[in-house]
Length: 146
Length: 146
DNA sequence: GTTACTGCAAACAGTTTGCATTACC
DNA sequence: GGTAATGCAAACTGTTTGCAGTAAC
Image 1 (tube, rainbow over the protein chains, first blue to last red):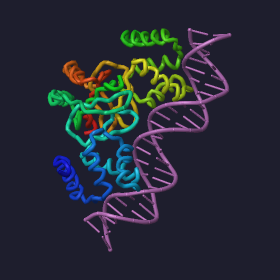
Image 2: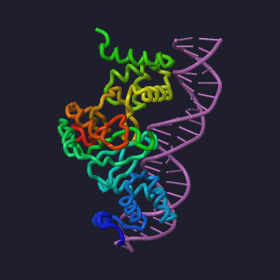
Image 3: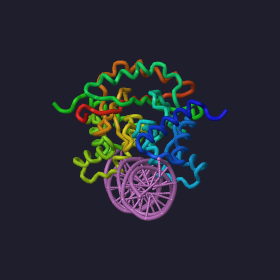
Image 4: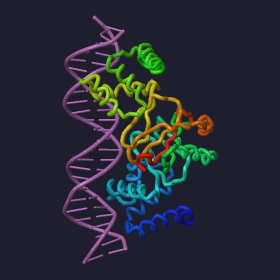
């Protein structure tokens, strides 16, 4: 069956944007792209590094770090400021609510974000402030940690 | 005229909670309490340190840092994870929307948070997740930086 | 061949801790 | 007097950079 078509399309799009911008497609980068789109656990840079290490035993943290920066600057992924200890990354750039567990530090998507579109209109009314994105974080304890 | 009654009450409450918990009221801590309640600019630990330095020229960053931790752990202030570079603190623990300017890094309160109570109900529906607080951040550019 | 990426090592910045001294209660 | 806070200095952790060698195009 191969890979899921959704992910393949996502990765193809990123690859195309890289080529258009004159950026190079390296095996390391491809692995990072794939990892981000397969894994929806909102990994930190360190997490991404350790995972890609399984495929590229000689990849450096610097490469992972710089690739994440590039993707973020292109708007292909969003950098989450939820965990004060480190940044986490999300390939899903649509606006949705995250839950953050204070105990295990896990970040999850809130499934039922039905009212989100309505919610999004809210801060656009701020006088003079140009909203690029909205982050909504529910901070607390997950089912396992309670 | 003296101090505004609101602030005095807030500070009195904190002082009382400290006494009840067996924590000591020092001049350094009092200055930090006052500063937090007078200044609504969502200061970082460094900001608080530099401001208190004007009153206590020998205060250390460690003291400021530890006092902020204590206040946060007591739930008297909230620690904001908006700016990935550093933590900011807010004595207003009511749920309200913050704007964060990518350029000048300033954090402000969104005045018009009328729909906030409605908004707050949303993530409480997450199965098994116990919500302690909700942070809503509008990230973008402020009027001055545009 | 040219240009950009990789990976190393080192620098950085904010945060956190251990401990002796000092101050509050 | 007993207990906790202060302030110093140093350790820590995640983030960021400079640069020589390497690989993509």
